Image (cartoon, rainbow, N blue to C red):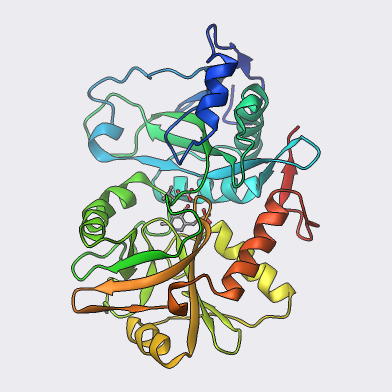
Length: 365
Ligand code: PLP
Ligand code: COI
């Protein structure tokens, strides 16, 4: 078989799935990333053979040789997207083709083989079909899909591996932040940066998150929910959060967001917000915003609102911004009207409750 689209998945249903009553109890308050469905997708890759042996099987630990390359050199990438129950009881994914494209771009940056788009999309459809009972029927509930791939070759030399494993797991989810839609508090790290020009900031690789954990721990120590990173060169401009992009709302209604210069993740939610805002005639600027502009703008009223956006966080208002010398508050620490309206508009499209002008919603069931 070549490295093409092998869509012939072997399906081995779980011999002992979670009992319906227990599943219902688990789905009542799933939180984020804590519970998982019964199945997973696995596909293997070897140089010269391409992707092979696509399967849907019981979710289970994966045997790993201690010399598997990923355990040493972190050659790993992942994606995150959500499936939602539609008003008529079906299931749809939001912009999975955009995740497929970003997964391929991340693969290229990490010297890994790309998963063909058709195979990526089919792997998501497969897990949704077999685990559809795991969609939580609660407000803000969704099935978070986590496709990922890593170097499975048993070899300690430093070069791109010749064998990989691609998997998809699924995790029923509620709100990412335990406060729900309450504005989050951010920590501006004085010491740590996330990504430098030429680095891996635009790739969704596990290493970026590992490198951010010390900063995230510092944020938590200071009573904050997330880190907001400054650019690594001048330590002046806002890049993004540990797991979300950031937008500012000016007093004239303009949206401002840092540009995609290679150091931030090109968020699919970010792009969706830009498209929706522009369609509604709102001005959007992709430009650098300094920490100083934010601090003084929040004080003067020029920057009225700020929000974080991403698949897990959807659109989450930013309340307080804390740094070693002090803190300031955006929008009086409330959810601003523009943030609230954009969130509602996006969520309604994602959940099939509003028209889908850009063809973002992919029906699975
Ligand atoms: N930035 C980082 C570092 C992220 O981890 C995420 C989440 O995936 C985002 C931004 C937002 O990306 P998306 O909207 O595609 O989920
Ligand atoms: C996502 O939104 O999918 C992410 O990967 C962010 C992570 C913090 C959960």
